[in-house]
Amino acid sequence: MPSRIIANRRLFNQGITGMKPESPEQVVRGLGAVQAQDFHQAVWGIGLRTQSAKLSDVEQAMIDRKIVLTWPMRGTIFFVPAEDAKWMLKLTASRFHTHDKKKQAELELDEDTLHRCRTIIRNALSGCTRVSRPRLMELLEEAGISTKNGRGYFILGYLGRTGMICFGPHEGKQQSFVLLDEWVPNSRELTLEESLAELALRYFTGHGPATIQDFAWWVGLTLTEAKRGFEAVKSNLRLDFVNGTEYWSSVTTPAVSADTDSVVLLPGFDEYYLGYKDRSAIIETEHDAKIAPHRNGVFQPMMVAGGEVVGVWKREIKRSGIEIAFSPFLPRNDREEEFMEAAKQYSDFMGMPIARIEWNQAL
Image (cartoon, rainbow, N blue to C red; front, top):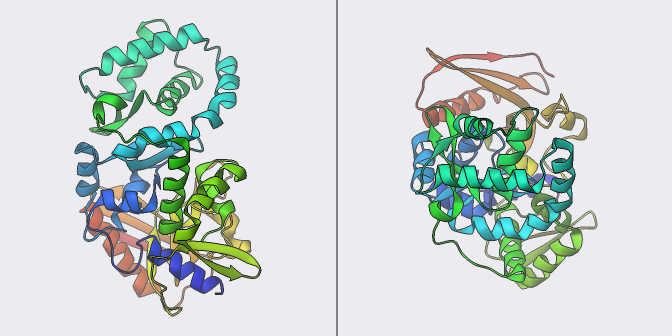
């Protein structure tokens, strides 16, 4: 099973190619979670995996409390199935304890101050009230709690990681927050072992073929913890060897042929790229650094052909429509029309026309 087949099976299992799920919540549940450091990128990551989804469909899934944004893994933001948010947060909470304590000291946020923050924000959000980030910052400042120099961002992240709040639907262009227990009153309760097994099965089903190291990286657990989840569901997984490395996927997912040659436009931070510690099956080593060229944790949207990342792209929303710029790694080739069609799919999702498409010189 060479790299090309690994890539195409991942495209298929992630729902990027083949039969797509009908709803945004099915996409999120199938993958386990969807990285969402950039909201506007993440909604496209869900939309492209859904049958005929529009931006409004993904936003409606949030309004209907079927999916939520929170901080369940690696200290970053993911879309997760609403009913699974609490057990996912509990699974990884201990991993952030030491880091949070260090950061609290750096920001001069003692336990008394954090307790006051909890009280202020809980009172503001009670009764399923949605409050925007700027307004929450104002409330803290009015109480004499500075939100400058990253303090406000840390406070909201800390309350999210500890399960008190999660993101609510957008209020205009602003993010809003809600109390997780009120927003999702029927959360599932899983033991630690059940949580490890559940997440392992979802990961290898939605991301396979993948290694145990990939799974540990994605969740942000130790390799020992990841292996416990893996061993619990191993009987449901299929093993493939590639150059002496073990790759695992669900026995329920069908094999796909090696000649899948799709062209897609993926968002930045997409699961197809960031869902794995080892990305060598989908991108040439010489091009890997081009996905995050500024080394600031920002990953660019990707052009993918035949499972391989072959360039980056960006879009700007203007009054006249969407302006798209393609930057392939190699000189333009006969896939240009297919990428133009992929751009049309993106514009359909956004519900806006394409105003301009430009091709830059190869990176």
